[in-house]
Length: 218
Length: 399
View 1 (cartoon, chains in turn blue, purple):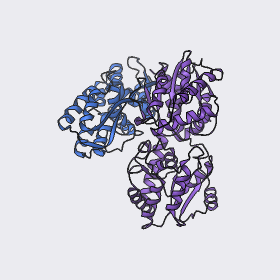
View 2 (cartoon, rainbow over the protein chains, first blue to last red):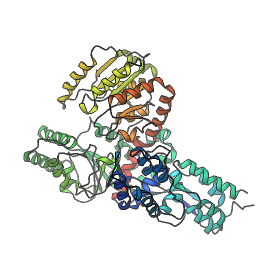
View 3 (tube, rainbow over the protein chains, first blue to last red):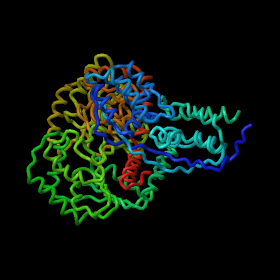
View 4 (cartoon, chains in turn brown, cyan):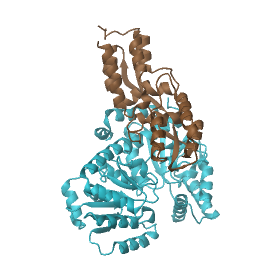
């Protein structure tokens, strides 16, 4: 039985959260060819914004496609097959936005043409604004409780954003569980979740909790 | 006051506003615009400034002064920036610059954050004493009249950051960061708060609108950009299939000489159809607008050219499916098939009027999504937080 009140090595988990206010990037695309050019030139925050930010259901795309590029390809170019491919690219650990950029170029470049879409794709970048929440976990029990109640923006900052932006190599939850408690298996199970395919932060939260419950309460 | 928003945005969102405000608590902030009342900017500042004060921020609001000559110049700047054409000469630029200098006695420039709204006071930056300067542009500058834009650009370039309402309004000829911050509605305002059904009924009664017949409404000026003739055409096409009423609510704009011409054309197009209600209401008819939107079965904003089109969010907040023109800020609000429908023609609008009138379940689904979309993205608390984050960014407090 797991000692849930254990404080491990005594390292605290302090929860931060972030917003990603959008910034105009000057990059636009009317065709697939221009989209590929844009993806090559866009900064990492722009790729993060279009690929991973839709994880928040407050973002502006219907849930069928998990990122803005896929949505534009389907809606503006009418190529649903390509949209499905782009929607399902991998964003799992230890990949960063730079890996995703390579995948996108690999998928899109051979198909790139000058056909003009119904609407323009405007690349948007962002500037993460980070703030400290009131939540701190000292033990596994507290961590389990807090994962269910922290702001979704905190969950996404620690589990998705820091890693895909290249600030850390793996998500903060796995890192803490392994470093502080030696829970390698739990850490690895969490690391296998691919956040790119989520369009709702609460479903992501449920899946994280499911793994934690299954492995910590066994 | 700010706690009253918690029931709409939740504890976490409200808490985040306090947390971000904490980062900039020691900064003095001054909002500057050109009018204390009237127009969307004054409306938002009248709400925003007290909210910022409640967060413990050291914030003030000042209004620049000018004579008729100055405001005629800035009005012509405004039109030239939005419409891409103008009749401006060197004398106009001199008048603009002269009043920036005169306003030095009115506007203290020694705040840590100078938050300047729209073109009228933008030239104050010539006299910058320090601090960080943010230019908040509330209008569409995607296709400006070049002489006016080039004149203003030399001032805007000196700012630390600027803010536009939608990505397509961003400028490629400016090097400073351009934040994208859509405008917002206030759920506590007279125009947007829930009103009693009896109030709705008595207002419909007053204006001769039949409460028992489905109502299709568009609230906007009598302006070609809002396509009122297209709205009439869409209604007439739909009317062949469904028994509906059309309500078009505008307001007289004294600064828009074309308004009367458009109105007369719309009256002519409407003919003697008793189910078409063309209303010209005075500004600030907020309760009436609220009642009309609340009573509507479907709301339209069939614009051909649009800035942001906040009437869309107003209707969506009241759980109405919106048929919107695919232009400006409307596609940010109307997600096709999710919160409403985007159209490019009167025929398209007519198609979705018929579809929505006949399908109550679809109306309810879209209406529910619409309110949720506005709740998450277009309430004043989101705009407040975005302003705080912009201030945090320019003052290097974002990490």
